[in-house]
Image 1 (spheres, rainbow, N blue to C red):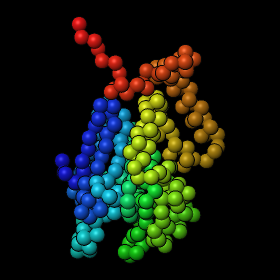
Image 2 (image 1 turned 135 degrees about the horizontal axis):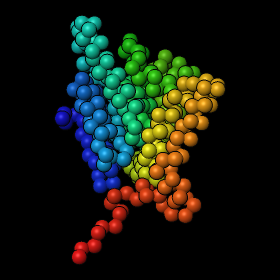
Image 3 (image 1 turned 135 degrees about the vertical axis):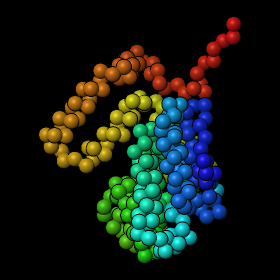
Image 4 (image 1 turned 180 degrees about the vertical axis):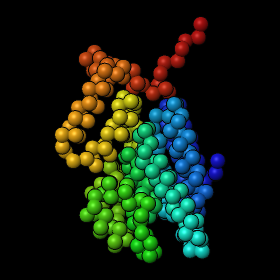
Length: 272
């Protein structure tokens, strides 16, 4: 695995992915794109992993696509350019489609494709000094592959402004337009991410997966008889599952559900 993407799983099942090219503000080149896609896929299939945190090495989250590589791509054939673009599109989609919850832990500068990574995560928490920019238009290119995720996060009208202007905006504006869910002072960032993970771990694991599948389906549907029927069927199906029955029983019995306690806090077996 490339050292351009690092990953670690702790005792509680928290998986952290670190974009590791700090010398270029964690801009992604083809090797990094391939490594991130492979890492996400591997963590998705690991039953020990409960959630995935994405962050950057050094002082910045991600500067988007590597400018030097994009400059070289002018000499590529159309087929080569299409292959490269598809690899990046797959990386973004793999992150977005994860069944396990993903949290972007955002510091410093976030540019271009880095904004796409933030938008593709389920939850984004940023330090107050973070800055954002959909800078592609300033380079004479377009934010094509990240556009589905960014537009879903900030809406069509805000996308018009920031994709067309390419202007920088701060964390307060990122919060206002819906790109990030919370902002805090930098020393508090890791603790805030930890608190969010605790919230996620008090949720039923299978319910989390079902909700992640439900949201994009409902968001893209008209509120008609078809979606009314689909949603009724979804809740009817899940109510009968063992997880749902455990969650309902735990609530009525005023106790924690079986899935709540993280591994590191579970009582260790006593030695005989």
